[in-house]
Image (cartoon, rainbow, N blue to C red):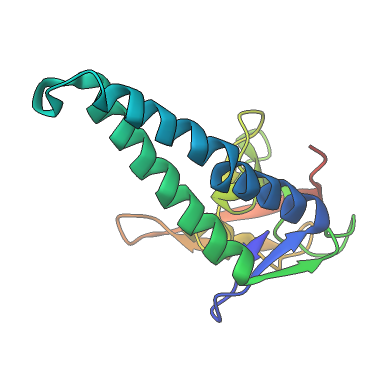
Length: 165
């Protein structure tokens, strides 16, 4: 999954279906649950000192923010094929790089949006300095990206393969 400068987000069919299901849950059953929690907390009395009410309202705010994020993401989504094995580094691929040509100092990560992030593997956005540096590079090619201090770092792409959840 990746975003381009035109605000189009490319998703695999699997990612689109997963995000669509999350949106449907948050817009339906989850919304009803939080409304019931707020109503129950409201019946407990004084709202100024009602921790359950304030916690439920905060949870509702976070949930509604996620609904807006997902709605916007899916409105701008284009469903496409997952990247193929071989070829160039692309969003949706697990990439292994070596820092400054040192084949022992490596990093393996998923090049994808935060929507695709999992606890199994570190995720870098295609818009991040490292992500934009390696995006489009072929296995064996060198890439450069800018560090926070303004200096350039070099990496070599060792491997790029489609992510398998």
